[in-house]
Length: 401
Image 1 (cartoon, rainbow, N blue to C red):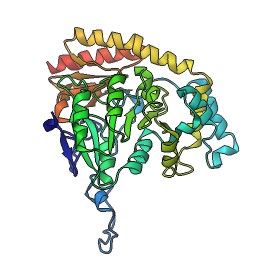
Image 2 (image 1 turned 90 degrees about the horizontal axis):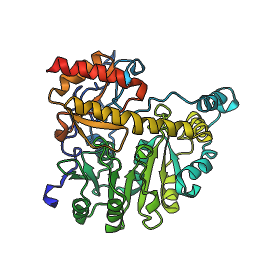
Image 3 (image 1 turned 60 degrees about the vertical axis):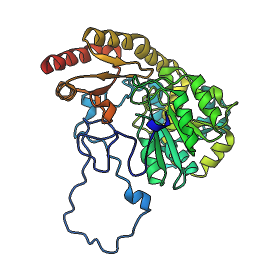
Image 4 (image 1 turned 120 degrees about the vertical axis):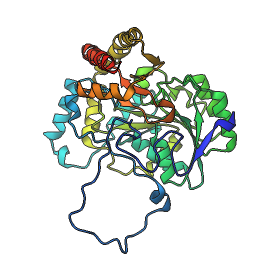
């Protein structure tokens, strides 16, 4: 089994973009152009330019998403964002920041900790608030990885891990998911015999939606004493968490975000749940004012009434998702099982369908990974938007026939 595991130092896992990233092939999916800096008006001297860390120099730039459009004008099903309007309590909390002296003061995230601790069900000492979960990923990888270390991930999965690891001089060991994109704990544990410094499980996995059972996570955590990140960006939709395993397995580090179910992607807020000693070490890397006042206030507003977020999640999981799956089944479209707020579908005329959808005001995420050459990740619309998507999708399929 280990023979199927592949590793990379200069690039990401197999199928992810190489050093040269074209406008139609990025980790976000092939439909998203890359922002190109404007050409300088005057020629700048290239002599005496300071050299950077060699691992940074050898890495590729992670592309910036720039569609050249106002995504607010589209049905945004490409980045698995929440379609929920900001609840009144969240809007009020943000306005209070604007109308107070806190707007011009450095932020204080301490009021968020007791509220977050109550929500997660842990002690505040087990939490670290971050500037989005990407920030949490950077902190954890910086804390545990040194040049020459190995990071072990499932493949395909969230490419940020491989990108950050590469800039730190670490090797990336990729353990393929099964042919149906299910997770094999046995294969992942067997690959760990190669001595990874840090392992990552994204649960549910992005972009496949694969749900990893808690028993499998427990087995991986018990196989080696090294740190195991469990990325729970879509926890609220899956309802399954490894937080319950922390007491018995203090090597588990859970990351979560407010970008998905809470709808705060634009404000950047995430958090780490871990043993207090791990949190203490991570605090050395997080700077004092990394989390802005608007994000803290918006999250505090959410915690004032969680019923709004929970109703939204139920509407996606219990209403819109079953309707969408029936629609795809009736359209003859293959859908892979997903425990997140998105589905991965297989389309024979994928690129044409994606282009037609965009022309009709719908954004979806075609995938760049080699195993997903005909796959598109589509966030589940809210029930009120489902008809719009179905009409656009049917039109795109008919035009591609």
